[in-house]
Amino acid sequence: MTLLAAMICTAHSSRAADAPTPSTNAVTIEFLVTEALEKNPELKFYRAEIAAAKANRKTASKLSNPELSAQFGQKRAHDASRTLIGEGTAWAVSLNQTFEWPGRIGLRKSIANQDIEMAEMGLAKFQSALAGRMRELGYRHLSVLQKAAASREVADRFQTLLSILVQRDPGGLTPVLETRIIEANTLTYQRRASTVSIEAAETLLELNQLRGQPVQTKLEILAVQIELRPAEAIESLLQRARLNNFELRLRQSELEQQGFLVNLARNERYPAVTVGPYISGERAGDRERTVGVGISFPIPLWKANGNNIEVAELRRVQAEASLATAVREVERKVVSAALAYRVKLAEVDRWRPDSVGKFREAAELADRHYRLGAVPVATYVELQRQYLEAMEALLSTKQEALEVAQQIELLVGSALSPVPLP
Image 1 (cartoon, one colour):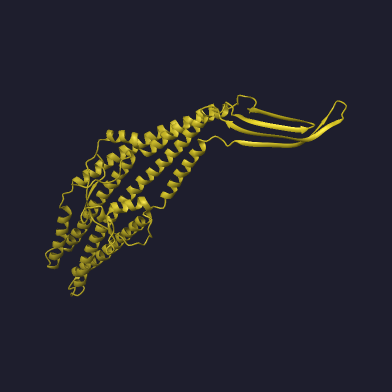
Image 2 (spheres, helix red, strand yellow; image 1 turned 60 degrees about the vertical axis):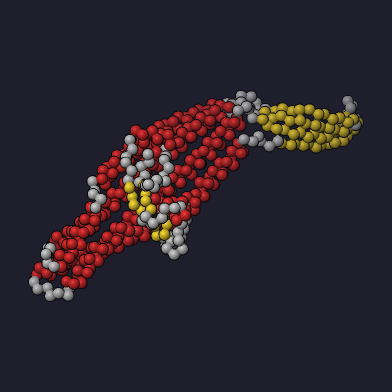
């Protein structure tokens, strides 16, 4: 079972409704994910890497081109007394093809196939990370908007109250001090609202950048209700990570490729043989023509390739060590993220569904009764602060849980698409 939080779109339920409308430019988070996976500028790099690897495979699976050679010259023939008996032209033409030792081209093709596989895994890993980042930013933006709205609500409440207090006759030290407390909190919460608004704008800038749009493109994300899925057994997560983790699959592919490189180094001890027909002729008194087949190979016949074999073997040992290290690192990250998710989930479960609403009602009630003189300023200020901090704590905890869930899913190689609640 995936750990990613399921979502309920409050305004749209069909795929066609995900697209932005001309009037509002409002979209769902999933629409942004799809757009990023199609238009992110960095995708071109990974696709070009795959294309280059496929081109290398075509080269690796081909024999070298045949070589045509020709010779032309002048010949003089003499008898035993050094008397010239004839002169004329001499020529020779040959067509040679080099044949690799059996198995060598297959090894090179296997190495090239591993390059393609690693390039495709690099693309898949980037797409998964990109989708996770888009969802994380989308959730964060919605969360920040709620924090900003609550901060402005509290700031406006203090500002309205301050406007009323400054019009009254202070009538003593206590009213003056209370006015200063209200004024100080007004400035504090106004600054708080501004800071959160800047954070919301920054998330939109990055969202636009990741989906290949101008950074200042206006965008409205449709609100969603977030429900966190139960935590999965750690051993189950570890098993999935060992099979599907992109980093481990990449290391495994590198190890397999290094094995092919070892075999190739051993194969290269044996020579390549060049074979081809030739024809030659000469005309110097008599006419002669020769037709035959030529063969050539390097001397000595067995190539001293021990150093290259040793280096390839050592590289394979390094690849094994790298894979073992990566396995331990991934396991550590999976366990750490799983434990963190459990903690965040337990923290969210301790919140009552109506907790934030109760704090808001208390803040509004304190505002009304403070104006009537029934609530002291300390209680009024504390309730406003508690309402805002409670909302921020709940939203931040949910956001952190979602981020950990995204991290887990990237580690275990699961699909990152959320499952809508029924």
